[in-house]
Length: 392
Image (cartoon, rainbow, N blue to C red; front, side, top):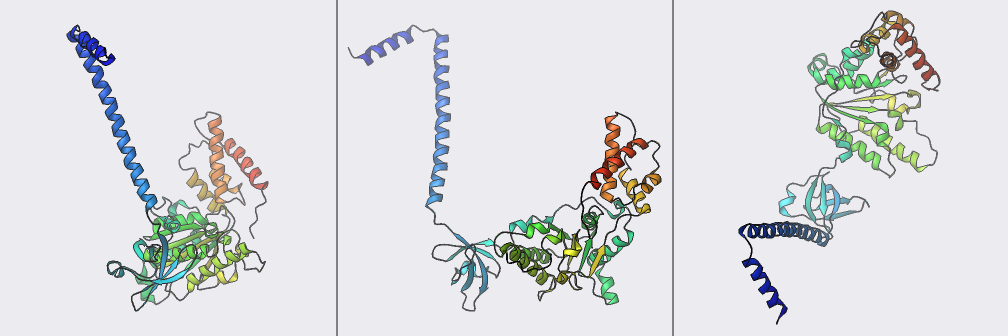
């Protein structure tokens, strides 16, 4: 007899002898297997769809990114392909033609025809430099530096917040201001306060971000930086550690130095070139003003070159009051502390307050005493004296 017939006969006889409870258990078991197989089928369908998408993506013709240099009178478009800098003239569809403008990025196919618009020419690395949320630093939180703060506000903030005053008097406000001084004296802190106070777009960056390996990349970022600043005007451009790209131009023959010089020349051109800068103010900060190129320091670029000095006794007292405002002090005369911290920067005074607090934490105390500040002064001074800090 056929084996399948025997198995079916056995199964029928087994089912006939089962109770209702055993029937339910068999049905539940079969339903569980059906559910598992259904999930596997769904997972396989999902994987198949993903593979189909990837396959279609691989079959697609690759597109190249190019920048529009100009649109000719004939309607043809003058393009420069990014990467290899090849230039060519091509056409576009009637649908896209009305939307194309010089400076835009477009995608082109192998036939060098424009397929779609990618966006404008501003580098994405420049876009992230825009400060979306203003810092919580105000001018009231900066100890001392009253004259320096007023000069910064006159050069940067007031032209943007009170332009009618300058128009009424008939004076052209300063285009830029350069802050220089020893590290830790509050140059970047002033810039943060300006960003908080001025009702303007604040774009901040470090000079080292403009130093790149490939030819022309740093200069392109400078162009994009000022393009975005003009689009977001009124705006403030703050370049910290500007000596990274603003050093004196020397002919040492190295390609790296030549690229930095190209970036510097582009910065000089943007600061006072033929293109109208509009409501864009520039701030710079450096510890080594002696290294900067003279062309960067002349009026018309940085109209004000302002030194941020070490705080005097009164300024140190203000700084200590600011940093110890929330601290639990016991018998700590801040005027005496200010007198004993001569030739100390604002950053070092903050470090002294922090270290004094850590001494009290170490003792598990409820308040900070004068002995904690004495230990903190010795610790911070020993650390700073062991470093060879160059300034001027």
